[in-house]
Length: 379
Image (spheres, rainbow, N blue to C red):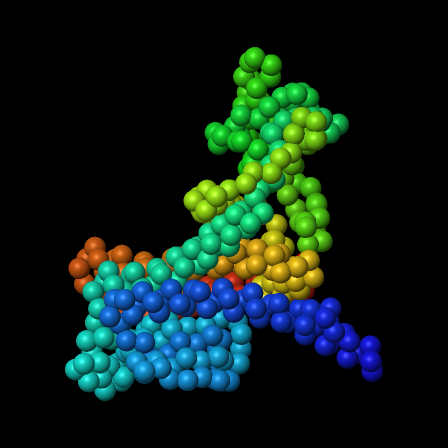
């Protein structure tokens, strides 16, 4: 019995070791996302009926002086902001509720606002996710700096793509597929997600520049949390002699700029992954849902709070990108409708909107089912 209780309630058990870190990570990301909608909506003069972290039955809540109900709900897998005039959490107008609105309420209802205000309010959710990621990285760079190594080739693995392409020890990377590199980490980042793609490497060899073409090959590696991941490699090795590892320290401005750069890099990598995934060139096991996030949250928590905060940053940028996909009922789907409305100077017809919403809803459900299957059975 004692072993069972420790498995559930111990610091390495299911509750404290996995569920608590998972709820912390997801709640922070959701809160920031929904706060973006809320703050920009309020700034645009839109009334807010409810702000909820989680779905389902309310656990605790209170009403503020503006009449907004702040809720903590039972299912911690998301959240929502419900504006005046909305039927549900996806800001769909409710005709029956609209008829009951007073003249003053109608002025602050979401659906009566100019298209630019609605678009700005919707875009603010993903934007705040990106700003959270930038803030986390900026603090990390300011506090700890960044350890880097020179982009040098110390040795080459026998039979590797690099050997076949003609890489030599002492070569220095200048660019990878047109992107300049400054550190060996830049090289790994540009190569790791390009398995099977033919890449052009510009190298400095002595006093000359040479162009080499190599195709990264997939290999299984263990990440910092102990998970098996598939990455692309060409088979070059860096060392302390040629790499000359050092720590770069940043001031306030420098750390913010580096945070922006790092966030932009992650956005680019994620976009590249999604594009390759759609055409079948990425391993489906790389995608996971709540179960995988919970597992990783527990692993990060065991390594320390710093790792947990970095996971918040990575999940936040992922949620921001996902919500910008032009699929209703995601934020990107709303923005697509508003773009059409702005061009044709009138809202999309209810019939067309309903049809697109149905397709989008089933796409989202299908994606959720896919990642759940990956979590539980697929990988």
